[in-house]
Amino acid sequence: MTDPHDEPIYRAILAVLVGSVLAGAVLALTGEPLFDSRPLANVGVGMAVLCFLLYWVFRFIGRRAARRRDAERHDGERHGRERR
Image (cartoon, rainbow, N blue to C red):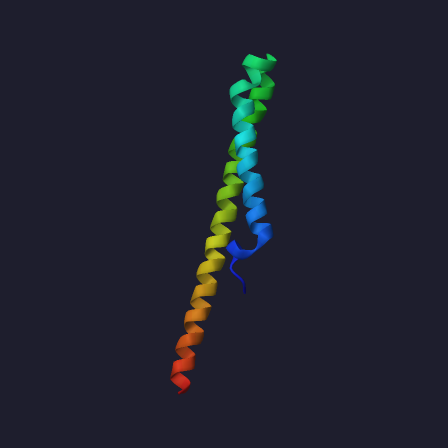
C-alpha cells in the first residue's frame, strides 16, 4: 500500500478543497456588499463549511492509511527478524 500523501490525486483533492474553502469564504464576505445578494453570501458560508469538513475527512482518511501502512511495515520488519 502506498502512502496517500505520495499520491498526486490525493494532493489534488486536498488542493481543490482548500481552494473551495477560500472561494466560499470570499463569497461569504463579499456576496452581500458587492453583489447585494444575501443568498449568495449564505451559499458561500455553506460551501466553505462543507469543503472544510470534507478536507478534514480526507486528511483523516490519509492519516489512517499512513498509520496502517507504517504498522504493516513495522510488522514485516519484526517478522523478518524472527525468521533469522
